[in-house]
Length: 336
Image 1 (tube, rainbow, N blue to C red):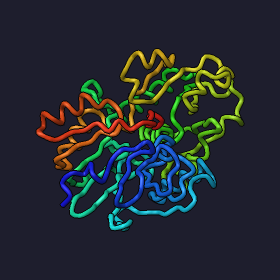
Image 2 (spheres, one colour):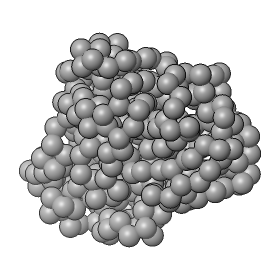
Image 3 (cartoon, helix red, strand yellow):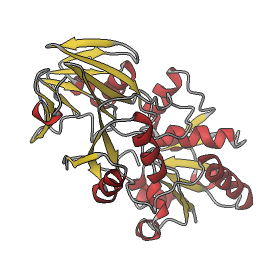
Image 4 (cartoon, one colour):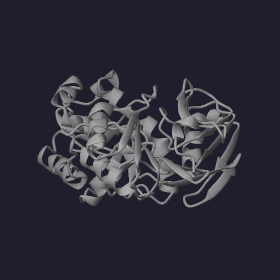
């Protein structure tokens, strides 16, 4: 068994590199061979010569990038394994968004699992997180501080549905990221009993169509562009976060602005976005979920790719585990 994974799996200027397999995981710039965890743009960049990912992630990359998704696209389903230069590579559900995977790397008896972004909460729009026991677990830490304990998503969605009833004279303008958060919010309000049509900013339609093609029930969706703003009082309109402050939103009279993100736990972030109705729903693991996952995978070594590394690494050391900050660059909060 290889006892020091840092000799063959390590960060470079292009991203996390597996030397014996000669591939990068979620590279930050184009490479010859990329293994991609999920379709968010900070993890799945265009222009790689060869891309391996789940079928749904490859589809999402093609929706977003077209021919620039990659030269050669190879699908690897959950539970399957492929050998690349003697390194076995597999994938397991990460629970982040549709198609999101943890990458399982086995070489000479040593197993490393690269989580990508993940959450442990139940989400009907994607496969749930699967615990994979390993020697090395490489985790994100987007919400790697004890203050981050996410609200129950169903409760937050019920608050929004209640507001739609209580403030029926106002259009509810909900800012969501286009991949994952948009479709999850639609699913959540449907589960909370909201059956009316939901109106979409044009940039959100394509990925909603793809989710629907994969069997995710989103109910009736209508283009915002086909409506008169005055006819949308009391209706729910979803748009990208940037559109809330854009002149596009000024077409509506006195909209109630909402934004769904784990960052809405931080009041300064809500004020910064001028959000009247903050909704604390995240597609990343919160502090308790990070610690639970580290315990569940039973790895002796924990590496942190990006996020709030210091607090998590301190906690890792108190658990008697070896920890390391990779400080990989280029990962943002797109899925949040």
